[in-house]
Every structure is written in structure tokens, then in C-alpha cells.
Image (cartoon, rainbow, N blue to C red; front, side, top):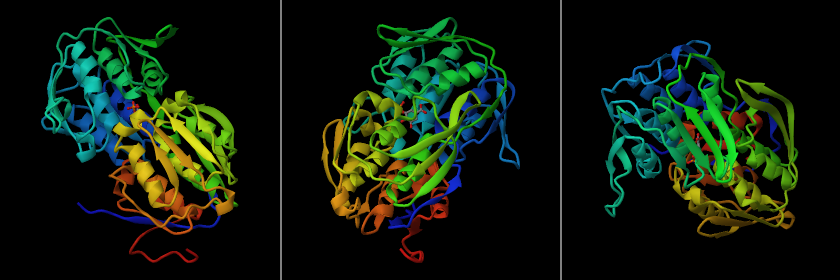
Amino acid sequence: MTVKPLTATASGPLTGDVRVPGDKSISHRALMLSAIAVGESRVEGLLEGEDVLCTAAAMRALGAEIERDDNGVWHIWGRGVGGLQEPANVLDMGNSGTAARLLLGLLATHPLTATMTGDESLRGRPMGRVTRPLGEMGAAFTGRSDLSGKGRDLLPLTIQGSDSPIPITYRLPVASAQVKSAVLLAGLNTPGETTVIEPAHTRDHSELMLRHFGARIKVEETSEGRATTLTGQPELTGRYITVPADPSSAAFPSVAALLSPGSEITLRAVGMNPHRIGLFITLREMGANIEFTNEREEGGEPVADLIVRAGPLQGIEVPAERAPSMIDEYPVLAMAAACAEGTTVMRGLAELRVKECDRLAATARGLEACGVKVEEGEDSLIVHGVGAAAGYRPEGGGTVATHFDHRIAMSFLVLGLVSKAPVTVDDATAIDTSFPDFQRLMTGLGAHVFARNAPVPSGA
Ligand code: S3P
């Protein structure tokens, strides 16, 4: 396997007006729901990153017809609820936990057998969190066990979907939109009502899009948490979907601009789903100048244009209950915290340990390699900002291990833009899973990000 180290060095102000790629969560769901709707769906703004392309390939293997036209619009002709066909080969979900878990949900209530695998990172991620409730609904699974012999819920994993699915009420043991979505998607081809109760609110893209395709979804606040109920066996019909720009990708140029003195950038049509914008709320509490303008709705999701201007940040204590709305953004928040005045305390981060890599450890080790003081707890991270005395600039100079994690790679490249010495990430290939254009877009804004053997940009 070829690795691609990338280096970021101190840059001048970032300026420009850009649109980051489409939302990854919404893109996966758009392909999956279109594949089980009747008739044609058209999807504009789909993220064409590796994770989503894996989902497209899987949905094709399950019988959907999928084409991309010359204008970048994706056309999907679906097979109707319950109409997916048995795949002729193993489904490779690449690096994507969302693709794997949501698809296991869809397949759980189709009477077919399928085997799913993924890359080394995905093969290490827990699938028991979805196979348990899906097993209650009637599906059977045989997975690989971990090295200790425990489990049998790792990929490669074979699912035998149920031919007589049972509706369930499931209380989520962890705040996870993937688990919630897997159960709801399984509920589509199940008679009666399937309910998921979540103690903490997680992103609701599945619910919004299921409604958009014609499903009946009821949401109630109960003493146990938010209960979402889907009425099974609806007729879903092909729809038009516009995918907003991904707030989780917008996070990287946003933090880079906040930390690079003199910067002002505009980010167009960023998804503003309230369950996704915890980072922007937190950064504003730290003193960031982020303006939400032109707020509107696109394809059933709120979006806005963001104007981000540089300025000093103050360390804060981030409320733990905010974690589900910014779960993917803690690594890049930690970069902002490293440059802030004072200490930033982040708690309730246990889920970071089971993402594309152990993001809590990877963030802590990378910051240490760049001369930033951190305290890593079981589910917490405390970052001591370098503050005004150091000109808000960490030492840098480290080579950071990314563990094939796109968000770790992009976060540390952002740090390199504002560090005293360059920061190198050992392998940036994973960035293609979610933000294939990252280097070009950042360079266009004025950032110095380059391959180590490429010529160093002038002024770097
Ligand atoms: C996602 C949910 C989150 C998030 C992931 C995308 C989704 O995972 O980290 O990147 O699209 O539902 P969890 O559900 O495991 O928290």
C-alpha cells in the first residue's frame, strides 16, 4: 500500500469563497433510500469520496441501477421496499462505519445472505452494537472474533436477513445515529411499528429523509428520551435530493481561518442541522467570529453560508451533553484549543475511541508531538492552549501518525498552518474518504499544504 505524507507550514491569511463537498451522512442515506424507492431519484451535490462510492457500489450489487451524468447529478432507479437482491460477491464497505452499519440494517429484513468486509480500520470496529438489535428483529450474523476470541461481531461478517421480521422497541445503549438508523432502516421491511428511543439526541438525517421519501415517522419526547417510531412497509417513491455541504468538512477551513491572523473566508451552503453544529457553537463560545448568513432550507435540511474571520480564542469547558452534535469534530476542536488562551476541557468522549481510529489517543499523541500539553483521560481530553505569550502558535515540528483516519490527518494539517515549525502527517490518503479535494481547496484559500517531496511553496 502506498502512503502519502503531507506537510503544512505557516501560511499567511486565508481568503476566498468556497463550497466544501457534500455531506457524507446525507450522501450515504440518499443512495440507500433511493435504492429502495420506486422509480427514479436524482441526487445533486453527492459527496464523491471513497466512503460514499463504496455505498454506491454496494447498492448496485444489491440490484439498484445507478448512473452519474455529465453535470455531476446522480440518477438512481430503486427496487422498492424489500426489493433488494442477493449480491453475487462480498460487499466491500471500505473505511465507512456508516455505510456498513446502515446497510446491515437494510439487509436485516431482506430474505438474503450477504457477506460484508472493509479496510483494516473498519474490520476492527464494533458491529455488535447493530447486530444485537437486528438479531432481535430476526436476522442472523456470523462475524469474525477479535484476537481474544471474544465477540464474533467484526467484519468480515455474514448476515442472513429475516424472511419474517419482528418489529421492536429499542433503547440505544450509546448515543449513535448509526445504530438508530440501522434499526429504522430494518423497520422499513417489517410489518407494524419499529421504535428507537435515544437518551441523547443524535443527527436525524435518516428520519428527515425517510419522511421526504414518503415514510411515516413519529417523534415523541418521553421520560426515557426521544422516541422515533417508523410505520413499516411504506411505499417509498423516487425523489429529488440536494445534499448540503458537509459541516464536518467545513470544520477544517473554518478552524484554519480562525487561527490564521487576517483571514476571512466564506463557506457556501453548509448544513446547519441542529444535531451537527456543536463545533460552531463551541467555537463561538470560545470567542470565534463566525457569522451564519443567508439561512435557508435545501432538500429538507437547513443550510447557511458561513463567514469566518480570524481572531484569538479562549479555552472553555465544553458541555459533555453537546458531544453527539460534534462527535466528529473533537480532533479539529483540539487544534483550536491548542492555539487558544487557557485550557479547554472536553468530556464525554468515549465514542471517539471506536471511530476510524482511537481518535482520543491519536489527537493527544499528535498534539504532544507538536509541543502542546494535553491530559488524556478514559473519556476526556484537556488541552492547554499556548495562548498569547507564544503568539497563539504551537511549536509544531512533529510527524503525526494518522492511523488511516481522514479527520486526524486534516486536523493536524490545519495545526501545521499556524505552528512555528511544519507539521507532517505520515499518511494523508484517508482524506479521500470524505474530502477528496482538501489539499486543492485549502491551497486555493492560501494554505501551504504540500507533499513532502514537492517544491515548498514560496514564503513557506
Ligand atoms: C454518522 C454518525 C456518527 C458519526 C459518523 C456518521 C452517521 O457515528 O461519527 O461519522 O452518518 O450516522 P455514530 O453513530 O457511531 O456516533
